[in-house]
Length: 179
Ligand code: 5GP
Image 1 (cartoon, rainbow, N blue to C red):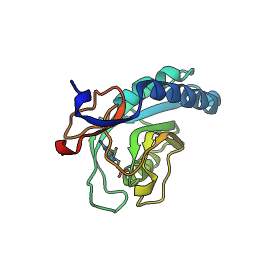
Image 2: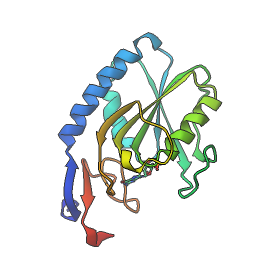
Image 3: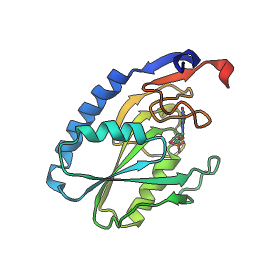
Image 4: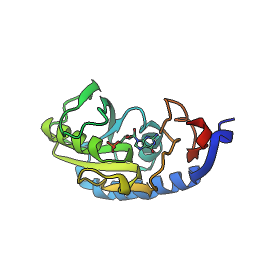
């Protein structure tokens, strides 16, 4: 049903799970000494499937939480961000792993990193399922990236088009006539 709307598949479910296994092992190693102090923060709604898969491969006791922010697309100023759902707890002194669906212009993660440090985080690292390096407008990179994609609009695995296709279990590109 959903598959017929796609022009092509860019990243399969198997590839995503394999990459989450690899990144999960790296994060497990990186935060081994921080047990009890690590909070994974997912950005709603796009990060939900990636967050769910990734944390299954973290072999440490971690906490998870979610934030929802408005993106103000079109503005370039950093720090101007509206919180729709805030974190449930104080993060003072905590090691934060920010989990995002995609880094595009970079504006969102740059703002979020600043906000998390302003809230007192000890460290903030960014994990993004996808990266579109050709679109970057501000100097910021994810610390861990699942896959690099070309400059085209992608959907699936949390990423939407008009709030649809988030439940597609892989990453793809929609047929031109759907836009
Ligand atoms: P940035 O601030 O890096 O430009 O924006 C990141 C946000 O833009 C992502 O979290 C995502 O919601 C949205 N976005 C950027 N590129 C795409 C894309 O190719 N497909 C979809 N569905 N969303 C995108």
